[in-house]
Amino acid sequence: MTIQPEAYVQSDTPDAAIKRESTPYDGAKAELSAGLLDPSASISPKYLYDTMGSKLFEALCLLPEYYPTRTEEAIIAANAASIASAVGPGRTLIDLGAGNCAKAALLFPMLQPRHYVPIDISKTFLEQAAAQLQRRYPQMRITPLAQDFSHELSLPASVGTEHRVFFYPGSSIGNFSPDEASAFLRRLRQACQADGGVLLGIDLIKNPTLLRAAYDDAIGLTSAFNLNLLRNVNCLLDSDFNVDDWVHEARFNSHEQCMQMYLKARHAVTVRWPGGQRLFTTHETIHTENSYKYTVPSFIQLLAGAGFAHAQIWTDEHNWFAMVHARAA
Ligand SMILES: C[S@@+](CC[C@H](N)C(=O)[O-])C[C@H]1O[C@@H](n2cnc3c(N)ncnc32)[C@H](O)[C@@H]1O
Image (cartoon, rainbow, N blue to C red; front, side, top):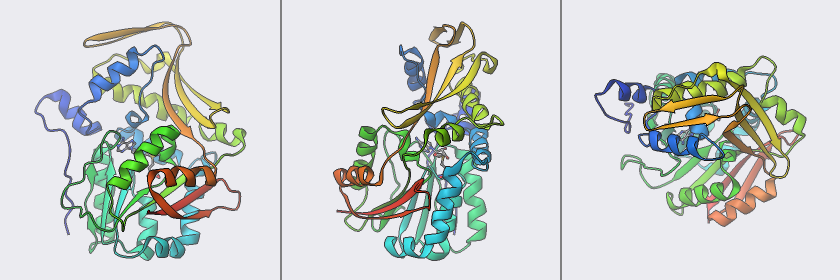
């Protein structure tokens, strides 16, 4: 069985060579420029993940403060048989934002997918993770796709349309607002047949003190993860962000039950890039991530609105996190 990376930017310019290394998304310049020029400046969280960002994320998953990864992994480990039985054997498991593919690998022994399709914007990191997994499971068909799925999900014909299950762990669905999440789930519903389904990890509403610590840890890994985004943006946009000018900030928006990450200017600074520039005043911010928290009923309602039913839920002893499987209605 072979690994076939199937989608990435092709160009011979040195700038694009850096782009190939960091992200397959070729609309980056326009999107980043528009976000920086917006009165409330923002950069999509997908730009947190160049190779360095993926490695920093992998490290921060080990932090005592970062409960989501270990809680979700414990839920999978404790319920692998039951999750596998709900999902069913012989599926095409499409792992959205697969990262190091570790959570899917936890499911493999029980789930035995027919085809594993990890998708991630962080191309080099994805390919290394998929190659490692292929060595562990030489018989399994693995097709990594370096792709930005935020605007559209483009699956090659080699990924059959039957028995698709979209696996979206890590509470990444929380990076979308509830309206955006609903639209994204509707797109997943359109991308599968009546035999399809979803298996998602969602972060549940909890004590804000726990949330704040998870997004602003004591040794500053989350800060490094957030600040590294500026280096990725410099590569993609040819901008001149100086990381020293910015500071990481995590806020809890209680009205929206949403953790938010920002980068705050330490002092007035002008950032320039080809075709644009922006003066940021002292303490002005760039919004870099939302992480919406859900209740199980509110999430099931979101799934129902998108065309998924028969939800099965697995959670942990503290009700901090939930895995949800639902079938195409
Ligand atoms: C929070 S991490 C989760 C990683 C892994 N699934 C886990 O649960 O530990 C989000 C992952 O999604 C990827 N990602 C984020 N936005 C993406 C996008 N628009 N298209 C493709 N991959 C994306 C990132 O590169 C990263 O690996």
